[in-house]
Image (cartoon, rainbow, N blue to C red):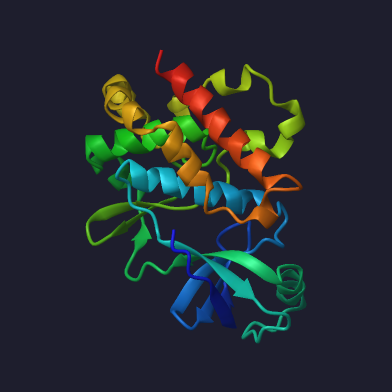
Length: 242
C-alpha cells in the first residue's frame, strides 16, 4: 500500500454492483475506485481490505494497489442523486482508494476450474486464514486481466472484528467452510500450500499488514487494536498449522 495520500477532485460515478456503494473519483494521480467510510458498515470493511490485501501480496497473489483518498466536503459530483450526496457527506475525510484495473473483467463460472492449481490453492488458503465469507461461485470477487487472476473485495473478511468484546481464545480455531468456496476443488493440496506459506507469514509480517490502517479507523486505542489483529491472525495461523 502506498503511503501517498491523494485528494478526490471530483466524483465521477457510483458503482452500483456492490452493497458498499463505492465510487470512482478523479484525483491528482488519476482515477481511483473508492470505498467510503460512510457506507453502512463504516470503516471495518476498509480495515479488512487493507490487511487482507497486504497479506495477499505477501503470498504472491495479485490485488489492486491501494492508497488513502481524502474526500473534501462538498466535493463536486457528476451524480446528482440525493442518496449519493448524503453518502459523500457522511464520508468526508479519509477513504480507501484502489487502482482502476483497466481491461479487467469478472472471472466467469466456466473459468473457475481453469485457474491454475497453485493460484487457486493460495486463494483458498488465504481466505481460510482471514475467514473470507465472500468468495463463493455466486460472488467470486475474482477478475481476469491480461491472463492473470486478481483478487478483489475483501471487506467481508475478518468477521471477528465486528464484535471484539465477544472474541474468546477459541475464536481463532473456528472452522472455515471450504466446501462453499469457489476453489473448493483445490482443498486436497492445502496441506502442501500450508507447509509452503505458513513459515513466511511471521509475526512481523502480520504487524506490517496492519500498519497501514489509519489510527482513526482503529478506535480509542489504535496501538492495542493493531496488536489484537496481529495476535488473532497469528493464533489462527498456528492452529491451522497443527
